Image (cartoon, rainbow, N blue to C red; front, side):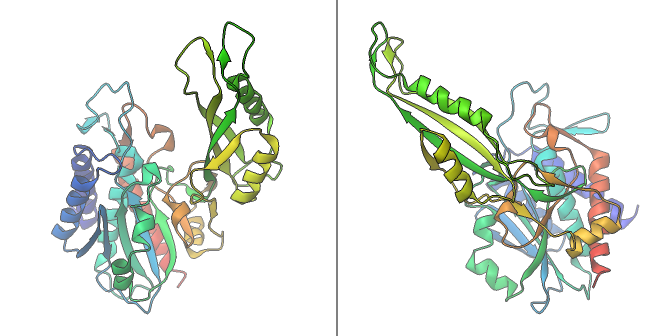
Amino acid sequence: MSTTQNITNSAIDLLKKMIAIPSLSREEKEVADLIEQYLQENGVTTGRLINNVYALNKYFDPAKKSILLNSHHDTVKPAKGYTTDPFTPTEIEGRLIGLGSNDAGGPLVSLIATFIHFFNRENLPFNIILAATAEEEISGTNGIELLLKDGIFLDTLQGSDFMGGLVGEPTKMQMAVAERGLLVMDATVHGKAGHAAREEGINAIYLAMQDIQAIAKMDFEKTSELLGKTTAKVTVIETDNKAHNVVPSSCRFVLDVRVNEKYDFDEVIDCLKATLKAELVPRSLRMKSSIIAMDHPIVKAGKKLGLSHYGSPTTSDKALMPFPALKIGPGDSARSHTADEYIYISEIENGISMYVQLIEATISFY
């Protein structure tokens, strides 16, 4: 059996062990322990920041720039409707079923295998750094964002700058060169309480409905070739009122706004405020839209290999990287967060092969 096949088989075995360990966001310690131990058993010196595990290639040279291989090991809660135990890795007809198998266990173990493949390579034109990180599913602050600002981690880089990154997410090994940003807004509309049996009060739900209808008709004019239009969707609506006979004095709803690269968040917020009666408060301004240039060496390498490219409607840790990054990985985003989540074994095998070829092709441009 070839060394490459050994690495691939080992990666699949690692994924099965990861599935068996519950690793909901903020509860990733055990799976981080597993990944750290796995890397150490493969001769890799690791670093650790809370539940983030990282490593540098053996011949790391601070005089060279670096490529970051990153994916996450946290998961969402299991969706309703699983026909198997979500924490028991189950193989059926070439599919590996289990929570986190597709998002993003498959991409992560494929990147780990790729890192190990290059770990002992001398004379690379750039460094290769691995980061298996936490809290991606909740856009948390103790994941990749914390790691990239950590003093100890930065000290290990000794001044080496990142020239780019590969972010492992299920994209069918297509190149997601751009992502829409995510802006979540809490909206509150105020009315006046009254008795439902009499013509009293100002119903905040009805006022909120006017805003919601306005949102449904909103059209952000600037369209992106890669990411399409900026969109705003109402995803939650609620009041504090629990009594059937009271006209509610306030109504809250949540806006999920996906922003293309043609708008900054301030523009979008100003547009919403001009249209709506509700008070608007953004939860975070961190998850901005991102794009990597088509002439970046990593993208050129993908084009050389015949990989297609697109703009992704979903947001990942790519949004938190202050350098160009390409989102790419085995699996299919449509399976993420679904019952009986799965990834094909063949997708992992192909993912490792394509990641290796992508880095080799990137090397060829140096």
